[in-house]
Figure 1 (cartoon, rainbow, N blue to C red):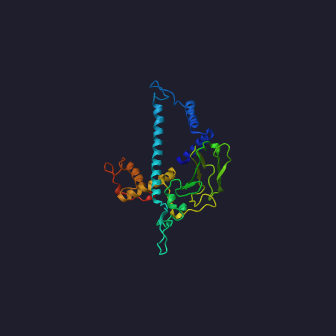
Figure 2 (spheres, rainbow, N blue to C red):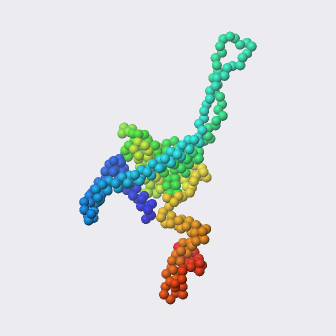
Figure 3 (cartoon, rainbow, N blue to C red):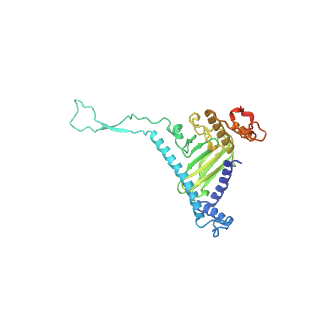
Length: 327
């Protein structure tokens, strides 16, 4: 199983625990309780010869180091998001309506009584962006709608493997039981209630454009902030809408590249090998298949009875085709 699939399986398991506990503090209590019951994480190593536990203070430093690691990642992501959002806002132009007061033109029959000023709106030279709510360039500048769209009640984005949906909720939505998410093979339903006395309000209830892998899809609630839903695509194709009836996005304006992070270990290895070989070829150096053969030839080059024994290995003596060794 690839590392990405293993992490997805871990996420599913931990997400189930989090939803069952209904809060991060209780979830962390479960995790540390497990470390207490089933590991020697909290045991002190009083004797250097002791084979379990940690020296005093080390366990705390380990926890702090991992907290710092992931806090740094989140801080960096938030900084990048803010930068993208500020750029997006700078590109949008708000329509301003300028009001000017004009006096009526004087006339020969004008009396001495005051004529009230006429308030007339002046036509603005600024124009409102056409169909701004469905502008793919705006969507691309927002990480929550990247390769997707911003709709009235939700935003969705996508990459090669997944579709992510984000729904902003009221501050009173703090527990998983206030949210109902039903993910079917080709249908998504999301209902929310703001408090215990209110009825559930349907946010999304529609047929998905394409099939998803129900078992690998998941959702989570960030208390008082938003619902995050990850739908794992059944087929690696680009969606033009989340659910039926929604406006389609302009598929020509999205960025349908597949990042290295979205590839499994085997695919990354192939890409890295191709990039390495291309670089070696430009520099006139041995490519990966040639290097493998060179390593095998070196073993026999200086062996007893070899006519080359004692001479320096010269790879230029060999013309090696890409098919000479199994890739």
